[in-house]
Image 1: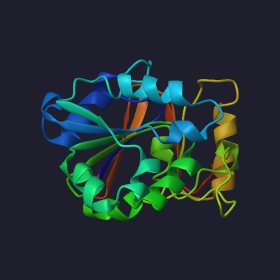
Image 2 (image 1 turned 30 degrees about the vertical axis):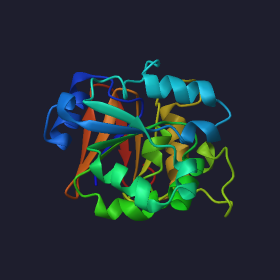
Image 3 (image 1 turned 60 degrees about the vertical axis):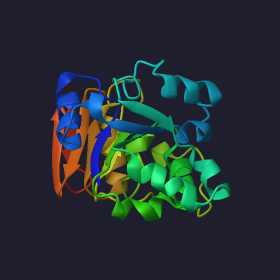
Image 4 (image 1 turned 45 degrees about the vertical axis):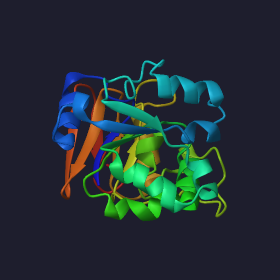
Length: 223
């Protein structure tokens, strides 16, 4: 897959241009599926958050960008309807828009639903993650971001990319650069701290930071 891993969605022209480049076509000509599942796992989310994400009623631009078509893919429903129905829906979409919330809960349902197993075959699909929707593609999220307890009790996620992400840098008092450095030391692997004006673009094995804000790379987990 081609990935656009954001902290807060498509928040500026640079990130929007990166999205258009990954799509290879205008947003207005692209079909999207929104995945709100992560919102249900977070103590700060729920039905209202899912509705706001799907309808674009948030300050986090994702579903309101002017897509040709937009549908909803709720991962918790997929095991009950069978792959013969939902896999074609995913394959036909140009982009998956993945909400924030709880990354471990999202990871659990990606595995339970079968979506995680399908990802390697989606070579022409773009994954646009928002916060937890980005973090789920990394190897670990770190103890600071564990809220929902996974069945194995750890902080491991899908490991599609080989780096971790500390989102919302500077947004709240706890998300300082000093906190990011402590988190990166725990991760003990490549990691990025990114603010809400920053995204990480991954295509054809190349990682590129797209930013109109602030970010930092911790190449070995710490400075």
